[in-house]
Length: 282
Ligand code: NAP
Image: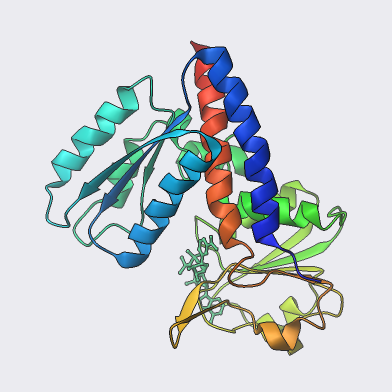
């Protein structure tokens, strides 16, 4: 069966819109997300446009700052410090990847933990690792909502995550562990990956290689989550060989229309939570 991320995202955004309305009535302002983009990468520009559009859709305010790839880093740092100190800004996001020559770690460190709506800061990642999550990285957070939408109990399930990036693979593994799954993480140096994957009740593919997961790597009845976004001959394809795997899986996310729509939705949810926390702490 297909997991229709687009539908789950639409339902979640409708709920968020109501919560944003309540927030605005209570605090006389809108939650606000600030986005910084550096350079002209077309994929990044599309992502940023969709994030701004998403804010408007649920009734949130947004600010976007565009910088050329040759902008001095100090100028971007100064803007980040200004946004960090602005009480009307609840979430700050720097669109990644940054063009060559920028110090990503330094610029991201200027975002206070309380406004880190991507959930990338060492504190937010650490809290997740300790089983006390505060702000959760948007893509894995969205995947947990998709798993929830299947009605499956996660406790005791064998989960295999392929990919160990700080933004997807690692936080995904920690969330599944926190949900009482038995988790294995695979990566480019894993020996016997196909065998390990084929034992998974829940298989998450976050690799960035088109149709990497073939039918022989999938257990009958497994839930298969395809995070990959790859462009092949002008078409978007995932990391899973969808046509070959769909009849073996009990549930599977399509690409596009699976994980993707949930990522921005959870960014909006994180921004609203940051705004509520900021008001409660004032
Ligand atoms: P990434 O940082 O490039 O990480 C890829 C991971 O895959 C690495 O851990 C790497 O292992 C592993 N890998 C690469 N080749 C492998 C192989 N042959 N066998 C096993 N593991 C292998 O990528 P990412 O940021 O996690 O993103 C993964 C994919 O998800 C990309 O297609 C990206 O576009 C997509 N994505 C989608 C969304 C969404 O909203 N749908 C959000 C984020 C990312 P090593 O660590 O050993 O190098």
